[in-house]
Amino acid sequence: MNVDKSAVMNAKSAATGRWYQALAEAQAALTAHALATVVTVAGSAPRGAGSKMLITPDTLHDSLGGGRLEQLVVERARGMLARGQSGCLLEEIALGQHAQQCCGGHVQVLIELYPALAPRLALFGAGHVGQAIVTLLAPLGWQIDWRDSRPEQLTAATTPAGCEGRVERQAFNILTDLPTAKAAPASESLPVMAGSHVLVLTHDHVEDQALIAALAPRDDLASLGLIGSSSKWARFRQRLRSDLEEHQIARVRCPIGVPGIPGKRPEEIAIGVVAELLQIEARRSDEAAVNSPDKATGHGASLQGTSAQGTSLDSHGLTRQGARQLRAHFAPDAMHQTETTQKAE
Image (cartoon, rainbow, N blue to C red; front, side, top):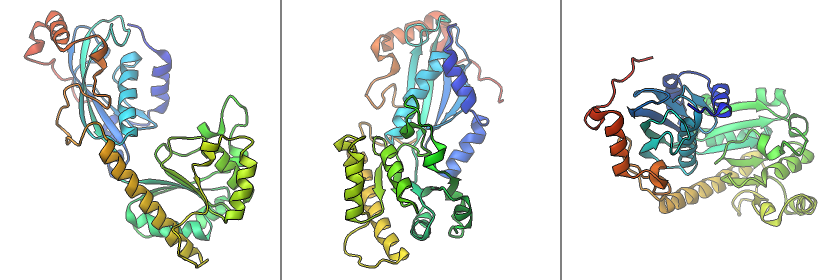
C-alpha cells in the first residue's frame, strides 16, 4: 500500500484526542466539523468498516488509515465545511484508481457535515472598545477569538456571565510573534480561522497597520474592519500601496460602524460596530443560502455521491456500475451485507 507519509504525519501532529471526544467538544462549541465513517469495504483497505475520523478546519482526530484515501476525504470535508454546507455525502473510492494505493480495494465513506452554527469574530484589541464589543456580541452566541499584545490587559478584561466558553483569549503581538521570512508569509501564520470576521482596534497604530498588511491579502475572511478616522485610513492606504494590491486594500472597512451614531464613548462606538457586523453576517448568510449548490438535506439523508461540485470522488473514472462490479468481485456478498463493524474502540 502506498502511503502519503506527509499526510499521515500531518494527521498525527494535528490529532488531539479520540473522534468521539472531539465530536462532543465540537458540538458543544458549535464549531464546524465533519464525521467520516468507513461504511463498506471490498478487498484490501487501510481500515475496516466502522472506522471513524472527526475532521475540523484545523485538526484531525483518529484516522481512516492515512495515505491518499484519508487525504481525499479530509480535503473534500474541509472544502464543504468552508462553504458552510451541511448534510451527508456518500463517497465511493477505488483505492488504486483514485487514491493511488496499491492495496487496490474499494471503500464507501459516509461524510456527515456539521457547519459552524455561530459566526466567529477575531478581535485584536482588549481596550475599552474591544471590551464593549465582547459584552454585546458574546451573549448573541458569537465565537470570539480575542487577541492583544498586552497579556495583563487581556487577563483583566471581563466577559459577560455565562459566555466564558465562547471567548478564547490569546496574547499575541504581530510585531514579535510572526516569522518575517518570505518563505513563511505573515498572512499564513496569523491566529485567525478561515471564515472569521476580523476587527483590528489595538492600542498601537504600528500594530494596526502590521495586522492589516497581513490580513488584507486573505480572501477567506468574512470581513475585515479597522477602527479609526478617515484621515487615519488615508495614511494607512498610502503606506499599504507599496506592499498590497488595490483589490486587497479594498477589503478593509475603515471607519467601522453604522453611520448616524455621533457618540464617542466606547459603548456607543461598540453599538455601531456590532450593528454593522450583524448586517454583514445577515447578508452573508442570505447569499450562502441562495448560492449553495446543494440545499439543506438534513443529517442522516444520503446525497448518494453528490457533493459541492455535484460529483463524487469516483466521477472521474469509476461509474456506479463499475463500483458495484468491484464490490461483487472482491466480496460477492458485499451487495447485500457490509463487513462486520469493528469493535468499539
